[in-house]
Image 1 (tube, helix red, strand yellow):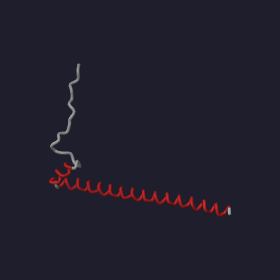
Image 2: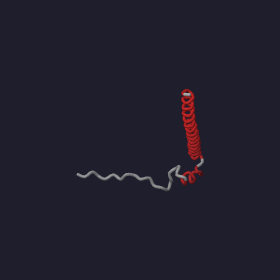
Image 3: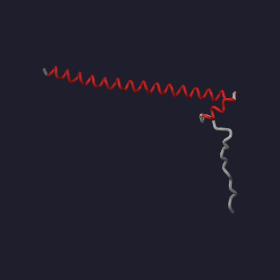
Image 4: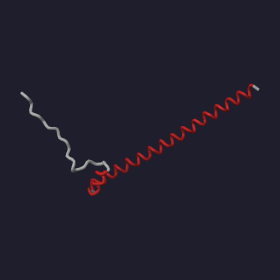
Length: 85
């Protein structure tokens, strides 16, 4: 009788632990999919930036999405003040 109760307790504990592990496996799979999508997007952007070096016609599109700084936007240069004597 005591053995049956212990066996039932262990079975319930095993079921709950295996359920938690299955939940973690789903999270890990989702994380891997996200990482893959980020890697593909970064690779595509890098290839597009390389392409823009030889084909400048794509620059307006890259500027529109913020991947490349606009040529019309002036770069801020620091102004030097003369040293006070």
